Image 1: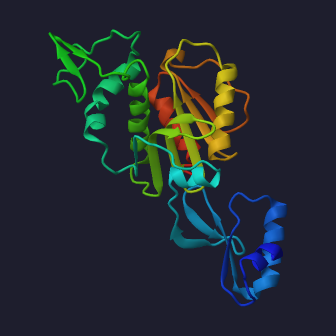
Image 2: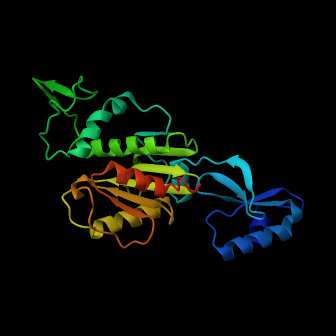
Image 3: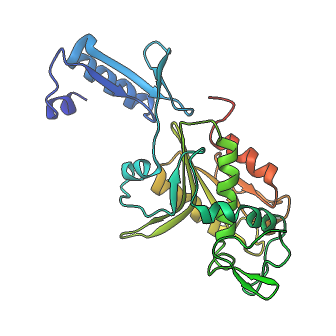
Length: 275
């Protein structure tokens, strides 16, 4: 810490705020003592709680401040820059019109997932076809990728997450976050709330148990969003209960075809009710 203070030309008497969020005990003590020796009593030490509140790390008292972190900021801290997103915003912000119009179709499909590329939306809802759908006789033909690339499932999980987080203005959500560069990847829904980051992976594949593919996804998520990232897998084809667990330690949820289970997983992952 003394070396860092010297590099950024921190002098004794300068006002310094030290953020200990995510630090190990030895790192925290070392940084605190080094900077305290450098700047004396002008050091304020804070820690970001999962709910977005800042806490004075010296006294334990909550500070009258909330912090909003964007998914792209978390990615930048972990060396992933310039992500491409379909949408990003707060839980009360407006969605693109076409995504909002498809809400009912997505909810219906979550209760009864499509089985192939030729599914049409006839008689799903007693309403006009949503944006992007084509009318062929009495049928609605889904737009490209809506069924085959699980776009409907990604949008449904976003709708549920926004509902769970409604009113929690410190939260941010992003849909279809594409990471480019040396290692490309995509996350279906990303949620930030205070110090917590939650990635929802929406899949609609035949049940194969947990499998190494899910374990890989957990490792990739924590590589891109930090080692404490929470990961929720949603797969309607697991049925109401996935019937399996994933041995990756805490912070991983498996959700089948259950809105209640999905809501509970989001609440737990984002620390709602605790902070």
